[in-house]
Image (tube, rainbow, N blue to C red; front, side, top):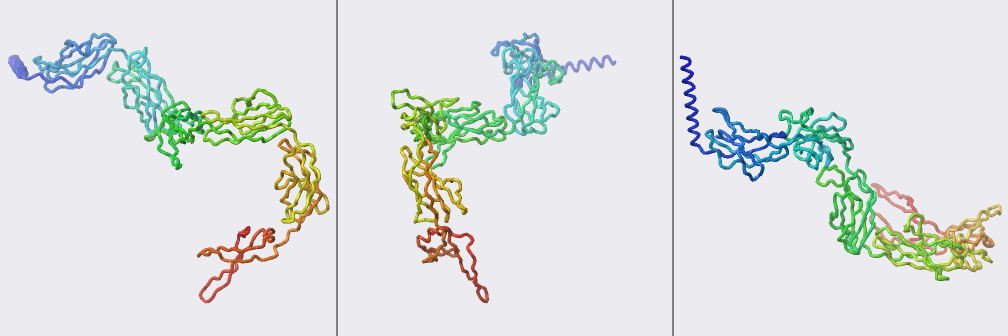
Length: 602
């Protein structure tokens, strides 16, 4: 009886299953699956998976060596009775390194399949990576995150099987290394360290790579031979850079300006921007000429002649906290100039064998250099160029020509160069000669009647070859002795006399006059007779015509007059103001003194 009951149950199940099959055979084939993907490979196989299809009783896997086909049936995937079929399969017997394309079609339990399988996916049977990632670098960072880049295995020739997934281990500020939970699928990824990033501190990074030939149970198992670890790369997470200490123009055409600059602290890249300075003095809109350059030189083009531009050099490193990572920079103002004008030159020193030439630089917004030539005029000699030690261009505003012959005239030529080039020469003729050797004769001193308290009148005989005269004074003390020679307020004079100033009132003086020229002064001098200045006397008269010229609620403007002879000995005026302040019951006169006396006669 038990055996008969078992047979009956089995027969009923078989009839039910056949009925289900017959019912299914009446249904249309389900659509192809979606989400087809390669989940794992070995050197000779590839595993694929797909999303389940509602109503599917089986799946058929097709394989081809070509993306366009033809695709051949590889296997059918069926489930146990009354169960859905699996949604994965492994394609065996593949050739290492040879791509195959896989498609999957959905079907019924009776074997009816849709005519169009899923889109094909490529599968590459390969081994695990044999080389680690290289060239790990920081692309950008801030105090919370850092973006890293690296060159992954398989991306370069002879670097082994390609890696398709990456994990990053990091350690910042000396903390223990930990793996960032997010995986990356290319040679770039953003890591957000726990606790953030401290600027000017060090972070270290290790990149682990794998491909689809991995352990699905633990893809990032550090002990697995299917993963490849890089070495640790340490980086200082520098704070934002400073600005270039100097920016200078180094070249020019009629439509370009070339600038060079010194390195900015902590800088990696530079951006060059420029703006025109308008005739009103306002600065026009700024334009970017170059960005993310590492060279410290740039030639800005498309400029206009005789116009002025502000050229700004900004720096950045890999720190970025906003939309623009560049920091405020350094600006130089330059004009697109033609050749400079000739520098006005003059003789600033002279001896029997040397000539010192000085010059005024012509107007320019650019750094000027100078050249100086000289040539003897007594014979057709060569024109010689002054070459300073260690260079070929002068940047100073004076130069001494040595080794000359006394009395032989020279033609000296000076010219300036800006970024565009050299301008015209300024020419002058000069003859080396010696300082006078003869002192002036007949030096005499007298009172100066207009201002006898601080002036004296001098005269002397002029000396041949002298172009100027130096005067020094000696004051006599109360015991009749003479003090040392001292320079006057105005030390040198031209001609045969002068009214010297700066003397003390009530003092006896004598003077020594020296003859000279640009080569120097003779050393003896001519001593004059003595002369005494008048004692200082007090003004003897009050001012006249005191009047109020203007009055406001807070001030008074006063005017007055004084005779010229009194004004000559007046040093200051003292103004007293009498003010009455009215109180209830009476008034009280006050006489305060103005704290700051008004000087002069205004």
